[in-house]
Image (cartoon, rainbow, N blue to C red):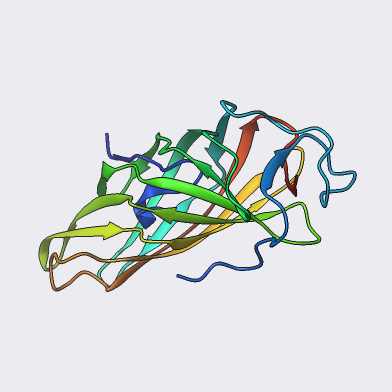
Length: 203
């Protein structure tokens, strides 16, 4: 069975998840149980909370030689600590993507951070230190690529009941086949199955 492990709530294929947008500046980012006023969260999820999600629809990674598609997937990550002034870091979470038309394997989990977007229930996602390999049979023969994240923008976590992750990642390529694109563009959507509801907020 062909699969790809996932980083946190974001697809590790992106090396999972270079700019990030709209982080709050005055308060720490937290995961909130309500959205009455996300400028000040009155009831937050605690450190140690496990975040789980499932792929909705098809996850795609566009490369110069092939569009890689996966039809099934799940992901999880644990809130290790509330972040600095702008972020909530997660440890390297793992999961699976299955029913893919290429083989994709995780090398390193890396870490994932959420950065609150002011005046919203949402947060941007940033991935660092994750690596994954992609191996595809093409008209050029077998093409092997490695993609890695380095403070890489990984999409947006949209607060709600349930929350969703809309990922759109341009994962930089490490030195591998010359047929590999300099960046692998990953798109897709995850639904957070636990906890529910989930909103991104300032403390």
